[in-house]
Length: 398
Image: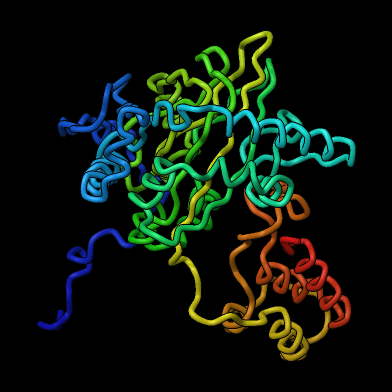
């Protein structure tokens, strides 16, 4: 070995592989770190609970709010990975007003025959409003303003993501008899297949959890029997978890050790997207469990320049098709993949999930996947252009 060559063993694990995930190592990461929590009013089933009504003065004082946010960041990163904001809406009128708007949207979408596909549940198993954030704002701007004039929600989002975060939300209503989800992790890497997730280097598995924050505002009282989210505290610590969550042994351990906390209307729950979690089964006869699921993203997950990638794809497709040769064939070669990656959008999000739902998987088809499919099937340029425009139209937020 050359004296300047770095031994491979010193580089650490650059790639995670599903078969190498260790349940024993996972379980060893679930121990309470024992850090005292100054602002929590309680710890229930290892999950810290914060009374927002009692913290009103703290939230309005910049210095104290920063200390509270530091505690929340610790809980989400190194602690339980989840926290409850009790009485996030001490006055639940904004929640009730938003609920009325959401119910009217659900009725209207049912009449239109809209059925929101779910990432982790059978389509039609519950009522879901995709892009509830925009729909609430456009349908009832005054209600929207009252709902999001909430300092606790802003403070927890900034504690994890910093300023300029991007708020999105999806409303979910689980009817009596609604089945539970299986354990999973969330967006970003949680929405990738095992094969896709294994392509990302190890450091990206760590970074993924810092790009989003998951939250839920309870729009109804949620006794445990109604199926509030099942949670496995501290499970966000296991780096390989984006690959492990589908494995039967990990899911069995989750089911044997997960916890659920009842929530009251106006409470909110926030958790690290790497936390193992799953919606519970609604075992009641009469509780319509409604939550506004907040999916908050970092401001930094964007490119510096805005490109018209659809036009670039239209321009480059005939060149790639001609170089590939006539007739359908096998997968495109790596050089072509490299060209496609330089112009087409490889990520299926953000999209309009009403028109472009994740049917048949966790995510819709991306521009890159569409172009590769067109080349493999030897589409004429005109057919590809039409498919590309239809693809863009489905993603239009309007």
